[in-house]
Amino acid sequence: MSGGGCSVRAIWILTPHDTVAFSRRFAVVEKRWRVAWEAEGKGKGAEMPLPEDYEVAAAFANRRRREGTARGSGIRTSVSTVGSDSWVDDPIARHIISLQIDKEEGCGFMLWPVVLQKRGGYYVLVLPLVDPQSFRAFESLLKRPDCGSSAKENGNLSSILLNLPCITGAFMVANVIGDIITGDVAEPEVIVSSGPSVGGLLDSLTGSIGISARPKPITAPVAAQVASVSSPVGAAQSDSLKGGIRPFDKDLLRNFIIGAMPFGTPQDLNYGNVTSVRTTGFSADPLPTDQKQPAWKPYLYKGRQRTLFSSLETINAALYDRDDVPDFLSVSGQVTCRAELEGLPDVSLPLTGLKAARVEVSSFHHCVQASEPSGDKQSLIFQPPIGNFVLMHYQAPCNNDPPVKGFYQLSMVSENEGAFLFKLRLMEAYKSPFLMEFCTVTMPFPRRRVASYDGNPSVGMVSMTEHSIEWRIVSSGRGLSGRSIEATFSGTVRFHSKTTQRVNSLFQSVSTTAYTEDSDCEQDNTKNSSNLDDYLMEKMNKDLPAVDLEEPLSWHAYNYAKVSFKIVGGTLSGLIIDPRSVTIYPSVKAPVEYSMQASSGDYILWNTLGKCPTAALPKES
Image 1 (cartoon, helix red, strand yellow):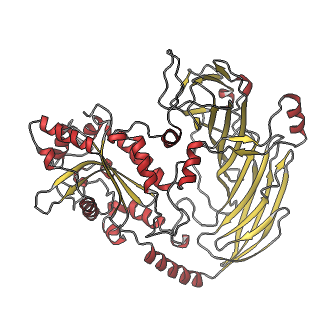
Image 2 (image 1 turned 60 degrees about the horizontal axis):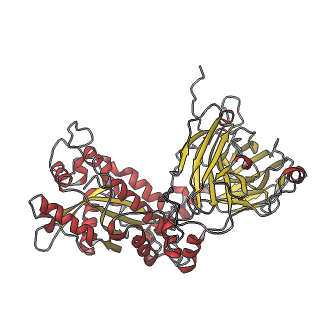
């Protein structure tokens, strides 16, 4: 049974206040649970039926009190008791938990393994079907004094879980349910040009004089459109928060479960596929006898044929402008695809220049068959699914100059006043068709409240918030292409006195704690030092003012400025796909379009006059 995939006995979604917001039981799987115990010669399965919702909520609340937090630490401490998850002494017990169900008649029982995942303030519990042998092995493990990850016997928790592939399936179920709760089910973005590409000489001429079509995200496929029309994913996001959590669309979740895992056995956990099949049904066109329809393409496309590729990159940078500290730049990217092709064609995509660009591919979509890299080339062959999907993820250094370079200086001339200076250069050595759509520099002051500032930049506009100053160098709608600019900004910033600031911060902290108190009370957290990480995460998730929190990577909160920008028309890694090299078999008349976009991640300008964190890199031999 454990080797036969994954079947789910029940699903529960609990609120932070230990109430069940949603539940789903699968009678067919529950019958298999009882039959398996009867085949063992024991009727114990009938003595451990699926509990009522109020019993699950009570058991979860009891476990929270026993373990310190909802997840617990998974590590045995002096207060751990025999039969508890922390007694197992394995951190995986934070995510695969057991619940002790207490019956009024006095004969309780245990639910195991319960996969736990916290998403959007809710707790998602998934109970998969396991065989009686694995269940009894875990029962005996709860009573052993030498259990845990350090135990050398085969009966430790890791060895038990390795024989249960249903655990992986249960995690996948919990993850997709969490995506639906939080509304994180949007397909990967594929960018297309707003105007058609003529190609050849005309594109070269228009690009050289700075005329280029603005790219835009492609519209969502029919699956996503239906979801947004009928009822928004994650339910009314405009509704006010109730108890610190957003309500979710239970009908949407219920319909997904019916389509994705009929009778409790997951068949297809792709939200787009399930919604599309529910809307359009399966394809009625018969397939050729020599072709097999893959699981990721449950129905065939009909309509105008084309193939779209997009390179979406994110650049992270730490610029120090110091002789003793080298700058750091890295690029992480993905190639997304949308293949609107009829039938089941094979698409071949050659990748070139990998070695020159020092690109390291980290993963491919499961529909891709990738050849072994040969020198500078690698070939990809795939049968594309319906809709947008991520073809590959990759990492690379920034093979161009930094899009924004220069220095930032801030010096405190008094306790409540600082003088700052920016001298930046944007898009140096970047030619058309590179286009910077916007660029913003933010000076954050999370531990000080800004009173006012003085100074006028050489270009752009400046605005102020309570804890930051924002400099918009390039505004949206007025892009920068085919040229570079130098931007300077000098001035002073004044802060409120620390005495006034501390009083206001204390009032805000008390107010925030009063209205966003989670059921994981901080008194329980502080009593258990092993749960310190949970305590810190709970505090940070309550959106407490930054004045009360230390920043882990900087000695002073005013040591850096953050740059945000977006560039279209090229890649920073140098990895480029040639649309003319893409082939489709059987051959069809389908244009291939390709677009590129790069945006900033953590792009930091460290204060050259202050302290900054650095990492010592190994010397090249």
